[in-house]
Structures are given as C-alpha cells and as structure tokens.
Amino acid sequence: MDRVLVALVPAVGVAAWAFGWLLLVHCLVALLAGTAFEALCQTLRKRPIRPLVDRSTPVTCLLIAIGIPPSAPFWIPVVAVAVAILLAKELYGGLGRNVFNPAMAGYAAVLVAYPQSMALVHASTGATALDALRFRGGRTLEDIVGNTAFGMIGGAGFEWVNAAALLGGIYLVAVGVVHWRIPAAVLIGIALPAIAFYDGGSSASLGSPFFHWFAGATMLAAFFVATDPVTAPGKAGHQWLFGVTIGALVFAIRAGGSYPDGVAFAVLIANLATPILDRLRHAPAAA
Image: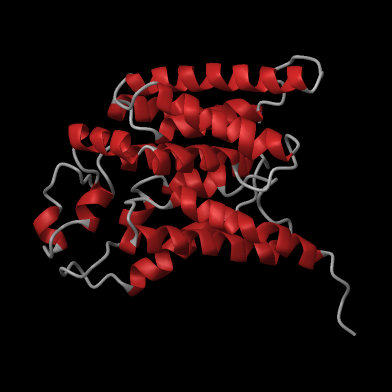
C-alpha cells in the first residue's frame, strides 16, 4: 500500500495542477475523515486505535478525492469516505473481507445521492470531454473537438491525469505490486467497442480508443481500482474476464448511460462476479 500511495502522487499532483488547488483540500478532508471513521470502528470493536496502519484507507481516500470535482462542497468527500469505510469495508469485517471496492462504493454513493451538487459543479466548471461527446446534439467529432473540453488526444486536463496515472501504474507493475494482466484487460475492454463504434468522426461516432483511454478515470480504474486484490478474482483467466468486463461496461455507460463516465458502476458490477469466479477456481475438475 505504501508503493500504491507513492504511485498515486503524480496523478494527484497533476490533477491539482489541472483542476485547481481545492482538489488538495478535498484530499486532506478525505484523509481526515478516513482517519476518524477508521478510529471509530476500532474503538467500537475494542481494538487498538491505530488508524491508517494498513495504508488501505489513505489509498481509498485519495481515489475518492481525486474523482470529486474540486469545487464540490467539502462535505461530499466526507460522505463518500463514510460510505467507503463504514459500509463497504468495515461492515463486511474489515480489510480483506469486503466484496465491493470501497473507493468506488463511496464515490458511486455521492454521485447517485447528490446529483444536484455534482451537476452544479459541472455547470460552473464547464462540460468535460465525455459530457460534450455524450450530449453533442448530432454534431460530428470535428465539430466538437475545438471545444475547450478536449485536449490533444483525450479530455482537457484529464489526459494529463491519465498519463500520470499510467506512469504510476507502470511503476506498480515494475515493482510487482500489481500484475499487468488486469490493467491490460481493462484497456482492451474499452478499446474493442471503441474501435467497433468509431467510424472516423461522424455524428454517430463514439470516440476513438485513444480518446477513451485518456478521458475520464480510465488509467486510474485500470491500474489502481480494478487491481484491488480483495475485490478482483485470483485466477489468470478470470482476471482477463474481469478486466475486459470492466472496460466494456465503462464504454457502454459512457456511450448510452446517464453518467458521462462509468468507472465506479462498472467496477462495482464486476465485483459482484468475483466471489463466483473465485468459487469456480476451487471447484473440482470435471470427470
């Protein structure tokens, strides 16, 4: 977890540079909330009060904070972290027993529960590239790529955050913290439908694979979320299926869902299959 925190630093720093220093305040608020909630759970269970001892909570808090728009109210990360730590993690018995990725559970909760607050943030900061692509009113890609929401190959700002997350992810693979299999599967899962529905830029085109790789939270999902060893399956073949499913669901939600980016929902849906896949791993061989 210490190495995961180190790998997250570039993405957090670039996100603060791209979207404003208030993102760092959200990170601090989330970390303080995570410390308090974890200490509360340890107190109620009459265990030694050592919040953040396993470093999983700081990782969860930073993943939540980096996904919340900087101009969102400060209580948003507090609520998200509460759901992540109290419900998605501790209610299941603590680290290693949770079914759902805590960070994604917390983020999805505030996204669904407080749509007006999140929508107000989008209205004040302008639409993201995924927003512009999803609600472009029948215009071609050429008509909308001049929008300030678009960068060189992905979303403005988001492409640099994704690049930083990619570098951090490569570091995690290089030091053996995560295997390359799941990140590769997630990126393939996004790329295949993107290729199928990309026709060069007509009004029906849904964006190129490179655009989808460097828009939204793609690289964070591939290297930092989907690779969570607790909520991902353990067998190689199942990891491929798990990752491709997440990627395909992310694309499907971006293309036809109510939310511009579908990372949190895609991961949570895939998490449901992990216990089944792990049970299949231990099933006796057929005669």
